[in-house]
Length: 330
Image (tube, rainbow, N blue to C red):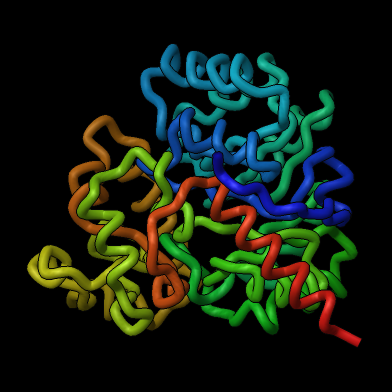
């Protein structure tokens, strides 16, 4: 029989809002988060989430929500792209609200419409942000919380260190903040909460889990990669994201071309183009699926991941380490 660790509940604004045991979110990862992974996260006492675009057609999307609800009474969340290129966003939101999903994460656009509709229900909305300007905009629109996407996160990461971004957002917006960027263990969780976060996003660590329905090649790449092997490139889906520098990615190429270099001289224009291009790519019927199955998104925290464990075991280890650190503080 597997030995269980006695763990105490960690109370933050985030855990109290949703009634979960631990302030950890299974980050929504494209083509990684399936029903099985979300259910495992929920049963382990953390918040499970998935990107709405992981399940298409829409009948499959509703089916996934229903399956999760059948397996657990715990809350879970859905990440919805609110950029205008996502022609499915209204239907994705409508179904989520109809099914009583309690937690929605907006990304890659303005969440105005999403916030207005979600707040007619009991659904809470946290918005991905990479800086204070963006955070203030979504706060003014009524966001319930923020996801501080800092440097070092897997996928589409920001450029500001979480050590600066998290406390700035917590102090300047007075909203609950989830810290995202290279958090894979109890030390990272302790640091995030100490900085003023109400919880931590963990994505890369759960790719190397027993319940993650990804290729063994992907899992192996995670546990064998060094942090120095994470590179930022727009080549996979059109928007700069963090990926493991594998032989396949080297073949695809990671450097910016002529047009990218030209546009880079106009930062705001560059970001608008990149956001639109990424959203179109991710939401199209063809999409970047082939790229994402052969090129592996991951954060800088890969250097701290050395084994494939069950979600339950990972969560228990993170919380036990966090509690040990906390017990040693004056």
